[in-house]
Image 1 (spheres, helix red, strand yellow):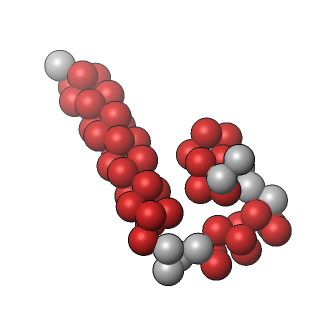
Image 2 (tube, rainbow, N blue to C red; image 1 turned 30 degrees about the vertical axis):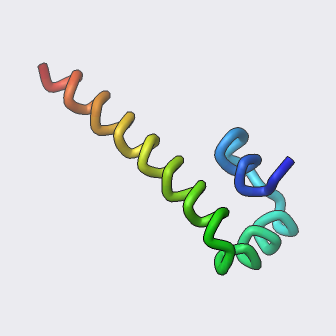
Length: 54
């Protein structure tokens, strides 16, 4: 499994996997994927917060 996908799916990485992920920070495809997933997550949190206020 791609390390960035593993992070998104499991929310957990070993120390070695974290180091591997850090080495991919110059990879534009990996960064694009992580930014998209982070955006989805942030939007989900904002929706939940908005719904709780109603």
